[in-house]
Image (tube, rainbow, N blue to C red):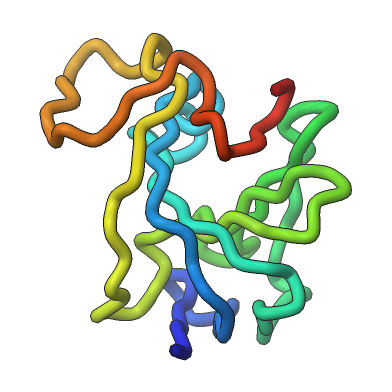
Length: 137
């Protein structure tokens, strides 16, 4: 299945041709501060992601473990990339609809904002899930 998406202004467009992981909701303080809420992202293999307009992606080294990619024109948050990983996280909201994506779990739940509750019944983890490698784990 082919999944396509873009930033808000369309300067960056992407196509994912491989399987996508379920959506992980990350409530860590970095994701909250960058997005204004929490990240909702899937993963795709680097080799299965084609990006047009990659020169418009600015990468911010948020930690010694990972970087965050956003459109330098409109500021849309698009990617999260763990150093030396062969996969990249793509923000679920950047995909065109219908995306067929479904929620899988919540991570870094103790860091969540105090203005909302998590009530969807998905698994919740203090840091990451057993199958998910994230920065510092």
